[in-house]
Image 1 (tube, helix red, strand yellow):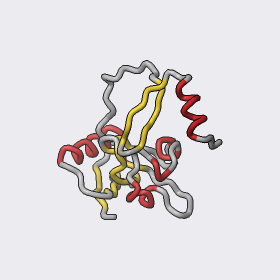
Image 2: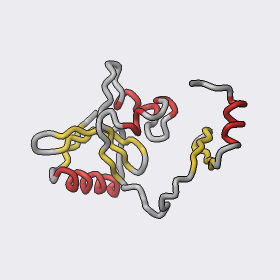
Image 3: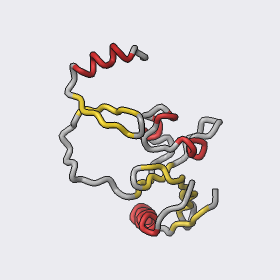
Image 4: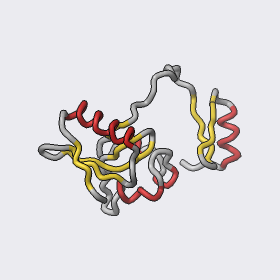
Length: 133
């Protein structure tokens, strides 16, 4: 349900909210008590239709750069499994018989590729097959 910004600001002032700016956009959250020392893994294989992709307005996602939108969301309504590398969608993946097929949207550093290889090995005990977009 959409509300005017002035009304939302008044509501936010009543909550114990924290905020941060990413790009030019302000984001708000309520601290949940989790230990901030727990780092996010360098590589995460998200499922198709994952809530991280579906839980945000597509054009305003913190995780999915706008230029890669059609690589994850196709026009038929399919949401492909996304590959999250260091907090951003870097490609998509698919489990094949003998390997994990990874299609990158751009280049990765050697360290990032190593994280993808370790993640695939840990989850499936399969090698990665790098695919072209």
